[in-house]
Length: 557
Image (cartoon, rainbow, N blue to C red; front, side, top):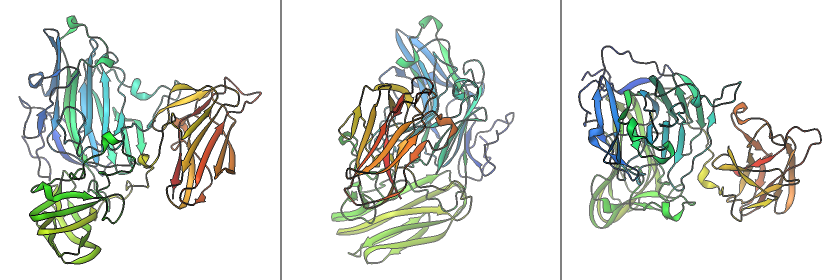
């Protein structure tokens, strides 16, 4: 083991290997494991547990010839694979590995991906998982294809649309053509930044997703799942086989003024559009640690400053409790911690970051408190709030921990929050006229629909959730055989206020933001807003002139 970083972490480097260049000069290496030992380092990793489709076994994960190797085998008719998961979570930065994957027969799903933990480490985590980044997924029956992906897991699981880079001649996504993962090693990486995710294969950009609506600290998974049905039927005679990872490296980046706290406003416990089965409990603030007396830590959906929740510390009876976040592998530099705190009962309350502590006085309303000049030297910060009292409560909202140095290029832009909208085109909020079929093309979050019926139409019915200025938008599901002459109309309280003709033949890869935008309109709360798209034929138009559609939204400014 060689310490090769200013951070308080282990960096495993082989002298014969050079550090690959990350995509931007602002990145600094914060963690690396070159797998040059003899066994998995359990100080930094743990084995992935079993799963319902096959067996994950510790002994399937070995270190050989400078690689982490996961062996795919069949024993007594039972398929076996395995996986390794980092013990700590990473944040904004660049994630990279070099790998060579099994492709000898079907049934194995090899992947390099990240998500939060808090569940059993086997299935989808429950507490602390906002999203999942799939840097690559590769089924052994198709080792030429390494699709990237991104999932939201809080509230409603859905997969938003990414912009895939395609070959300009064939229009085939590059993730299907750049590598043969079973024939040679390749390098896969992903930039996770506040305003974008960018995926790479062998240094070539293959996909991008802009303005993610959630953030999170995320553990890294290197896994090979045996018995994965979409990967095909295995031939036991062609086993055992193996998938190999040469290294994992994480690079951090200084982001001036960007909040590194996850779930800073305590809204992830109580989003208004959660499906019932995804309602997280109010006694566990998502992504926050409760080091002691957990019963005194709750999310309050009644007393709050913004959003749908605030942190409440206290209980009936005596308590000494806290809620905190441990931020590891962050850039060294000078930081500022801020929080809005309401302390009308004069509870003994402290805001802290590492060894800096601020005592909070009595305050009848939410008041901003700040700890300045927090010097981070070893890539680690423990930020939190402690309260000591009896039969009393203190409330905290809108916590921020941000660096005073660095770039502002990637700071968060206003996201289209997918959890504010109802996207289901099979319910009463969407009206279809004509015969519609499911499409293999993606919209913003679902597979799209299409129709070739004369005068086919789709109407999205929305209600303004607040008063203000909004931009109604239609996501453009485009194809060269779509209509160039779709009539879009906007109605407010049954009165048509705008109309336009939309060309649906422009391919999504030719535009960064494939939305049609109506002009901004002023709405009152509960106004009924209908967005309609109608198929119109063009006598000299090419092809079948399909109308394709998926979603419309109200984007309040």
